[in-house]
Length: 277
Image (cartoon, rainbow, N blue to C red; front, top):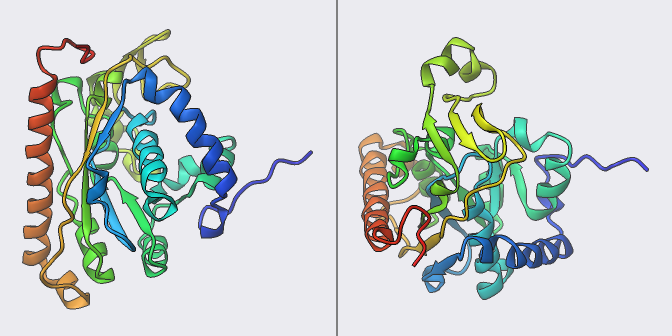
């Protein structure tokens, strides 16, 4: 039987049955394994909104699934976002068949515009691979790498930005070095838009260069907190074209998220490397 390959720009791929099954799987596995907690889901507004989250744990990214499952479980389909994903990865076999029915689409402003115009939600990670594959010593740092496109997206579509901060997910892997220079020398930034090529210590492979799959993540405790929505005073195309205004909002969102990360990290300290009580 031929396996279906999903169009990575088709918003109709999301299947409620697949979502329910995946949620049940995450509740049996990732949530207990990471002793995951998601707080303040009451901050999620109704209707269109842009979730702005910090990116963790390379392509494992357990907080993505944990947040989405808890948002869906407590707030329903309206709270479940579409995820914008790197086209090279989403177009791969198996990944395409698993994630497309859950609502993953190619990362593009056009797709985000279409989703928001329908009154639905989008999940973005402004920090991209730079943040997702930051070193272990920077695990408590929110780093958007100077990117501001998420603010323009929210302003253009006149939707609130909902910051989502996760602490502990990046301790589920151990990245020793990011190797940005090596990624540039290999041309990965030009060919696949990859700015880093991390040196990682993972089970069972030991030292690896680049994100290996499959591997056994460390059972780090994960806490996610949803912040109050950032509702810009000005919206629309003119606001999105105002570079100073866009920069001020980007700084505000990142600063609020870092302050929350600092607080969650302070709660976590003293419980050991994996956040155990």
